[in-house]
Length: 436
Image (tube, rainbow, N blue to C red):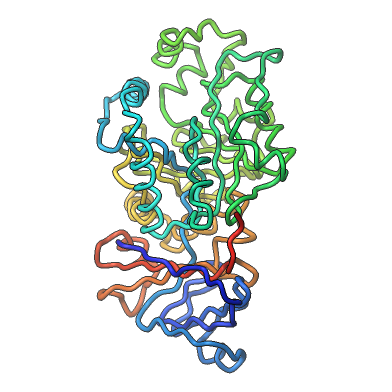
């Protein structure tokens, strides 16, 4: 897939009627011969094209035999790890892969970082992603956002990831003082180019002390930011939190993080997070592969979201997420790619196609919703992105293919959207003078 984009205009944005054979609002049924009406950088209405032409007088843009749909949301990525593409292989052990990741990362040459990261940014956009929840330990993304100035393509948030399994209540760092927090500290909310902001996150329940977990959550809660954390990703994580033994403990000892200054919780990751008061509507549990039925009910009762990364999970051999059970319980689902250290591409279309085979009980509409509205909800962007609803940003996808079916258009996009025969075009009329 190759995705192109319109450029924001320097002229006042007129009322436009964007008409195509198919319009997929996501939050309402598919419209055949539909249209999306935009004005002043916002979506005004969607509906049958003939009705929109009668109701509104404006410039008509005809896309012909095409599909108009919301842009995709990659709710969990690690763009800064782009130089590691194709450098790591599955090891049969999650912690073995982590060791290899750390070693490979240490070998990245200074000149490799920026070109690989910029290539990954381009690839995300070319695959129709307009919103990201990106996680990193360095300031590359912060610097690149500044350098892009008016051309940074994404809405979303950068999570500056913290790892400190031994911090106690007296040694918690000033997380608001991190370099990447400057914009956030000034505004108190997600700001910057097209609403791309910066906050902090915790890596995982086994790699961040309970006191620091609570401090990070409190910091985000006070500012209305989501709290993202890898949780229940591997059996090795499960073993460590239950008994303090296994490969995770071996790794902590190697890194001089043992003994810990708190008791092993002797429970599962989700129960542990709940006991610390960390699960609520603004929490994103990433991966959540290893859950029992009570934990699924617990997540549902707290309103927490789950971000599925099925292709990364398969690469690492950690298991298959229980997507059908999570959806059945009413848990908001989002989709992410994880990093190029555990995936060969940052394509949400590819994640959707993978999920169709792994979770046959999910309908194509359910999967598309996770890739759009679900990701926007998890990242706190549902007022701007995720569907073609009135008041949302006027940024969406136009897709063409010589194989578009006459029926089951959503099923086609979910299963075939990542193929070369599908062309993607980002229509962005959301702003005429993007914020610096």
